Amino acid sequence: MKSKTIILSTGLAMFSMFFGSGNLVFPLVVGQFSEGHYVWAALGILLTGVLVPFLGILAMFFFKGSSDDLFSLLGKYAPFCLSLLCLSIMGPFGVLARCITVAHGAFQLIIPNTPLWVFSVASCSLIFLLTVRKNRIVPMLGSILTPLLLASLAAIAVFGLSSTDLPTPLTGTSWESFKVGIFQGYQTMDLLAAFFFSTFVIRHLEKNLKKGEEGAAVSIFIRASLLGAFLLSSIYCLLVVLGSMYSAELAQIPPQEMLGYVAQRALGVWAAPVVCTCVILACLTTGIVLTSLFADFLKKEVTRNRIPNALAIAVTLGFAFFTSTLEFSGISGYIGPLLTLIYPALIVLAVLGIIYKLWGWKTVRFPVAATLVIKYIASKL
Image (cartoon, rainbow, N blue to C red; front, top):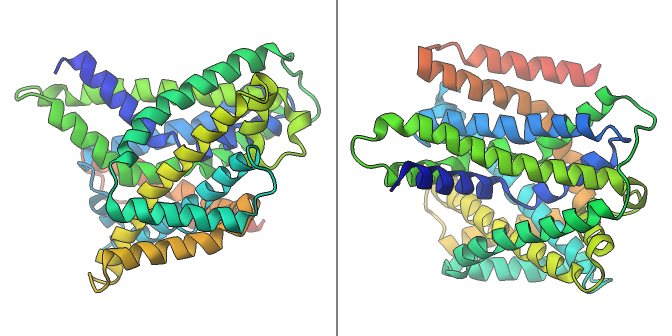
């Protein structure tokens, strides 16, 4: 395969890996709270929502896609404990449950007044059936939904940006808007996704490299990363600007319903349901992947294969159902402070992992622990 084709396919794979439900919500929230300083707000979320995750991919590239090898730099038990923590946040106690609430928010704009618990039961049941059967519809939906979502976002951009004027800075400072962007970028949790999903991207790259081309792998990887980062950054900037433009109207809209609301304002009542349907299916597709990931860890690492796969999936979705009843704001309420605490330490781990592979730096535990302690003390001041 030609190098340009490999770069394109790998870059798109990286983009798809990070393009999930939270990526459609938090940039709008950043724009809403930017108080007109949308450029600085966008820079903040690009730092923690794009640069940091791709730094994580680079670290995983040097560790050949093995999160256990990276985590083992922190000690013997770190791979299990850190994997359990990260997968719990990404799975039933965080992103998985959040996917259900985002899908429910979009569904509300199609069929209003649907109770969250009813929608959550239906979603968990559907995810269970598709995860147990390993249905082929999942990869098919993924390959179809990404282009549809991109086309929808392009349409929203064209009509949304032309329907109102760009906001002017109001109260507040650009620094405050920049901090909002940074902390909301944590909420995308894409650094965690990099630790566990990068292996698929790396295998794709290695599979398509011919013998003798291994030396060009780093160059191809970097260029593919730049492509994926550019696509993700473009969407983040677009959504931040839209959130800032419609900030007054979005003040009364729950975060999980913001994209659907903007779609209605930009495209009208007939086009918005198409966007909402794409969002719902994208959330459920992401939910299937996260369910499978956590259930596999629960079965293999926690119970040592003492329970069947179906039971592991059922337990995972049971936790996700109860977590989803906290609604989007409730989940963000406890996930946000936790991510603010651990994210800097995980960033330090990714950076030191790269340095370890390039120059043999072995002092990793102390800097990561020190970062965690300093961040904890700072949060209490």
